[in-house]
Length: 537
Image (tube, rainbow, N blue to C red; front, side, top):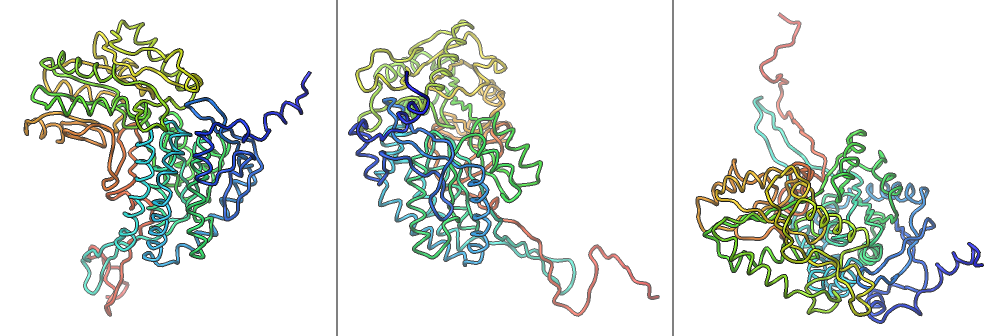
C-alpha cells in the first residue's frame, strides 16, 4: 500500500524526465524550469509557499510544471509592498514612466514568439493567436508611452472674476488585475500599461490554470523595473485560487480592482469592491451576435463568422455565438459556412497549420456537452458538429478537443438559455429574420452587451445599427466580425458585461483620481452663484 506521504512525494516528483519535447522546447526558451516547483509570488522577490498549482497542457493533458501559490500572509505582504511601491512610482515623472513602458515593450518584442508559443502550450489557442496576444501587450505598451505625455486635465472657465478651475488627474494607488485563462497575457498588458503610465502600482492575480504565462511575463517586466531602480512590487504577482482572489478583492489597501471573468463571479466582485467604496472595472460575459443582411458581401461575412465562431475554439469574450441571417441569404450562407466547418481539423496549436485547438480544460468540455444536450432537448437541428472528437492520435488523444457546432433552434426565443447564456465553447446558434428591426431586437434581447456585427452595404442600415435604436453592445461593428478588437479604442461591454472599458480611448481615465481645483488669483473672494454671506451692512 502506498502511504499518503509517498503519494504526495510521487505527485511532486521532478517533471523533466517525462516532459514532451514540444513542451520542454517552449519552456526552455523562456528559462522556465519544469524539474522543480516554481515560486508563484513576486513582490520584489520571488516566493510562494502555499498550495501547489499544476499547469496542465490542454492539448495533451500532460503536466507542464507545478507552481507554489501564495499563502494568506504572502498575499498580504504583496499588497503592502505594492502600497510602498506606489509611493515611489507616483512621484516618478509621467514621461519617465513612459520610458519604462518603452523598455518593457522592447523586452516583450524580443520574446514575442517564445511567449506566443507558451500561450499556445498552456492556454491552447493556435500559434498565430498566441503571438497576436503578445503583440497586443506590445501595442498597448507603445500606446502607454505616448499616453504618458498626454494624460491631461483641463481648465474650466469660472463665473467668478480672477478665478480658474482645473480638473486634475493624479495617480490612484494600487490596482489589482484579476485576469482570465483565455487571454493570459493581453488583459494584464492592457491594465499594466495604463496603470503604470498613470503612476500606480499593479498587483496581478491571474487565472490559476495559466501560471506559467504570468510567471514568464512578470520576469520580463521585473527585469526592466530593476534596471530602472524601480521597486519590483510596482508590477507584483500573486498566484492562487479563490481564496487569494477574495483576499485581494476585499482589501481596503487595493484602490481599484479590474476583473475579467464570468458574470456570476463578476457580480460578487462588484458587490465586495463597491461595499468598501473601491473602484471596480468589470469585463464579463459576451454573447455576441452577427447580423447578415441580403445586400451583404457574403464572401467577407462567411469568413468573418467562421473566425469569430471557431477561433480560439470559441473561447474569446468576443466569440460569435449567435448568427442572425436574413431569409434571402440563409441557404447560401449556411452552405458556405458548413463547408468551412467541415474543412477544419483539430491539431496541435503549436503547429502553424492548425486552425482548431483544444478547449482549455475538462470543465469546458462538460459545458460544451451540456449545451449540445440542451439544443437536442429543444429540438434544434445540429447542422454540423455536436460532439467531442474521439479516437484522435497520440498525443492529441489526451486533449480537450470538441467539434465546432452550428445549431438551428426551432425558434428565436431570447429568454431561452440557448440564446441568453454565454456558452464558452464553439457553439453557434442560427436564427432567421426578415427585417433589420427584428434582428436588432434579438441582438439586444439578451443580458450581455459586449460585441455585435452587422453585414450590409446599405448606408441606411448602418445608420440604424449604430444609432440610438440600434445595437446596445459596447462594440458595434459594420462589415467587421465580432472578434478581434484593436487596442486603440476602448474595449468593453454594456449591461451584464459590466460597463467596464480597458485599453484605448478614454479608458485611462479610470486609473487616476480626479480633483477639481478652484484657484483664486484675485484680491477678492466672491462666492459662487452670487451668494452673499456677510454681517456688515
